[in-house]
Length: 453
Image 1 (tube, rainbow, N blue to C red):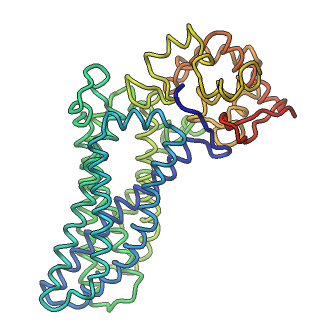
Image 2 (image 1 turned 135 degrees about the vertical axis):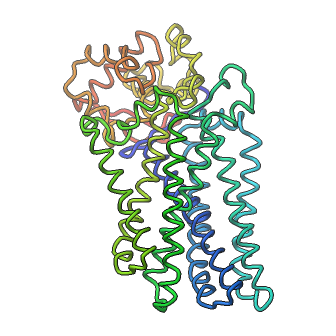
Image 3 (image 1 turned 60 degrees about the vertical axis):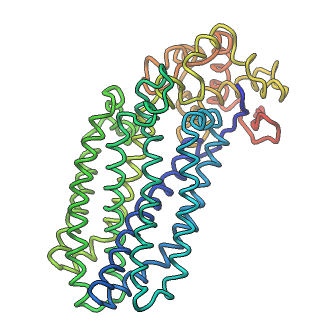
């Protein structure tokens, strides 16, 4: 393979990428778009109605929003590039070749977005008297830039689930304007308003405000939360309709995993409960029931963030066994390479592994085969451990399963390598499961070494 491989111990590659991505999505959607939209609305109402309480409300949200967006959102945005480049270099490299210009434009938009936010923050107190209108104008500019980033990213992320005709025609337009682009975009914008309205309500309910202002503001936020929640549900249905049937079938399993997937009712019950809590917050706000709204605000935040994480988890998981459907498997092996490696060896076509001096050692070769075939989702002793899953199996049993894995488990890619290499991986997994060997971090290019126990 053209890149060296690395496996994160304990947590695993997929979990690390997912956690960084979810934190970034919550901030980029809920704070950068949603909360800032409400902040801008508050600034507008303060000027339009000459109400200092609305201006004070907007100012209270500005500082924490600026700190979270620039201090956490920007860092996790760069962190996504760092972890994907380290853990999935071939995948991110392929995506860059397809979407160079959208990503380049998104990087420019990101710089402008951060610059606009910092300018907005430091100029806030200087915009007085007639110039207070600039608080609204620049707030709109910032929200537009944040939403533009979502437009650009939605096309790219949609392609990773519904690549449509791109694997055959290699057309940029068919890749970017893929079937799930628009429904995903509208879903994300609706989700941004849901998160933003809940975050804004939390500020309104827990910060010190006069009761008369709180009672005037509550119905407005409640109305937006109710409307955006309804629209987001409609957009979710639109998005689901654009997802291929073979992927939709894996949605429940992606959340409940193997142990709980036998009880799919849990999935729907949990999502219904989350919706009812958020709907309850919207209704309590519309009815100006501040104590009830305050009681529901914290659970609503947790559940809304959980629903966001669930969406990202489902979107990433259900496209298995592909990273890019029809083109690349989740383990960075191209679909067209599968037959080649089966006939001509994976190990002989791994220059970084050969350069590391791992050829000839059965354990090292088994470790590399694990890295290439399994480490995108599995660890050797942490989350989703292959050692735990192989502990009750014989060596021959593991070998047979490896040969039919993609048939038994449709979201897992087929084994890449020759029959001899399948034997080597089976032997490695068997020893690992029985505790005969363990993997340790190493400074060599392979980044893993095997030690007898």
